[in-house]
Amino acid sequence: MSSEAIATSRDWVLGAECEYRFELDQGTSLAIKLTQGQAEIFGAELVEGKTYIFYEECKAAVYTWQGCTIQIRQPSTEYVSEETPMTAYANLHIAFEAMRVRALDRANGNMHASDTEDTEPPRVLILGPENSGKTSIAKILVNYATRAGQNWSPTLINVNPGEGGCILPGTISAASVTTPLQTSTPAHTLGSSATSAPAHMSSNALVPLAYWYGHADTKRNPLLLDRLIRNLGENVWEKLADDTQGRVSGCIIDTPSSFAAGSGNSEQHRQSLIKACVDAFRINVILVVGHEKLNVEMQRTYGTRMAVVKIPKSGGVVELDGPYRARVRRRQMQAYFYGERFAPPPGMPALASALAAAGYLIGGEPPADFTLAPASSVIGFGDLAIWRIGEETMAPVSALPIGATRVVSEMQPLAVDPGAPSAGMHGAVLALLADPHPDETERYDEEVLDLHVVGFVVITAVDVPNRRMTVLAPGQGSLTGRTAVVGSFEWQE
Image (tube, rainbow, N blue to C red):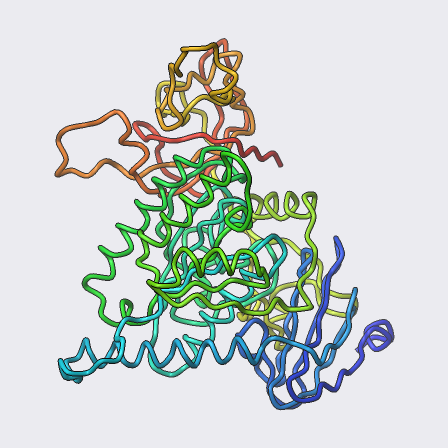
């Protein structure tokens, strides 16, 4: 080990139920090695003797129930806390585990009709304000379930289009999780889609079902988001109908902060979107993270129908600002098309093969070639049918003349001509949609709203005189005859 590496390496001895918290700055990385004891990161267990690498402004915490020793190399912001809400989260997991066991017994016919205990598996909606740690709680609960040794495969559902889950921002998605979700970069907060993850990353290669909302802000088109949530719910239940183990494993739903507070029209939309989640995913438990007013509201609205539980917010939650979230979205785009690029901490080998040989882990997997080879192709404007949902800038109803009504509704698909001056297609991210169902011979106006996402492309150049455009895709394949929807997301290399 070089003198530089020795100088930046230090040991932390953590007592029982303590947490080592770290925050990385831009362009920095961190290596953590568990040298003694037991520890976990957001519920995913660390392997003793292995070195884990974190990068791209990652902010996380190493927690230990019984005490441990960890070795840190090249830290940024770091500290240890003895005050954590992990006991409360573990108690939730124990309660949910009991619900799963009872649900499985009932599914296997091992319970009598006279049994009065509730036999529904946990279907949990997590609500809370911005920077309350909802996503971390969702990961902890899912990871604990997958580590329980019962072959649970909970469905992790993300209805926060600003985060993107395991795909890209602008989507809402659901994925069955069978192994703990690892943490290494905020670009893959909830794991990686199998369509874009490096082939060796089996632990995070999820197969999500996703719908394209196309915007980061839920207030942009709440009626569209409501419909997509209900579409997602229908598809989740259709999939779980023939999957007993997945059905009794339950589901965890992560939500955006806009579900926690609103005013005026946004308040009405907020209530509507919460109800859409409750109905679509058949929620039976609502967790409210550190928000007394929201807890009272949910108790009043849903307390007679289901359990509403207020849980504490972790003191380690980092206040994330708008520029940080924008950087994370750009990294998600970059990773989807080009894979991962990062600089290991000083004193560590730069080549993936050397890192793997030295026993390092990235995202819970031995390092390999994290880069992807996207394909760039030139197509005609008419080869790809592009749609935009509703008007790009929709004036509020109050701004319309008295007696006037909208010509275009919030959910009406509008065909886009890439060559039109107002199209703004250069750098636009497009969601490629699945083909219409072959059994449905009758087409309808809003059909594109009900088709799930199969991939993404970005328009890198537009040649208006020749009516052609250059499109970047993660892999080879013809785009002719495909249907795509554009939102407000843009990405340029």
